[in-house]
Length: 93
Image (tube, rainbow, N blue to C red; front, side, top):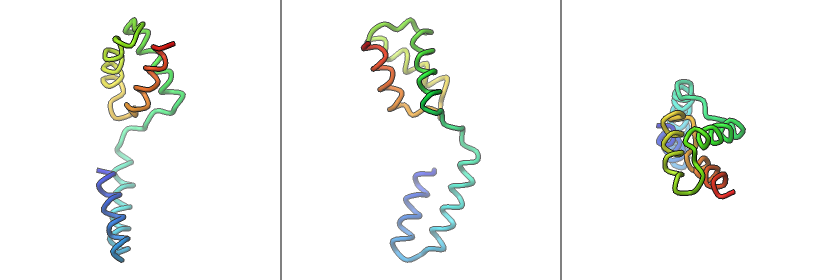
């Protein structure tokens, strides 16, 4: 929803409709109030470490289990791309 409004605001700005762009930006602020707070980088590292331990993950073939548990526990709060890179880094070492 946020991304859609950001794109709309940019389109309105590009087409000389700043009042409509402003309305979209206000809606983004309202939507963000109700969204879960994303994890910080430190919290993400901690969550990845805990998930690896909880799943007894030792190699890359265990990555799916770890990612599944992270997705379940931190839905909407975790950048899965960054988390995947951290899990891979953790399991390759």
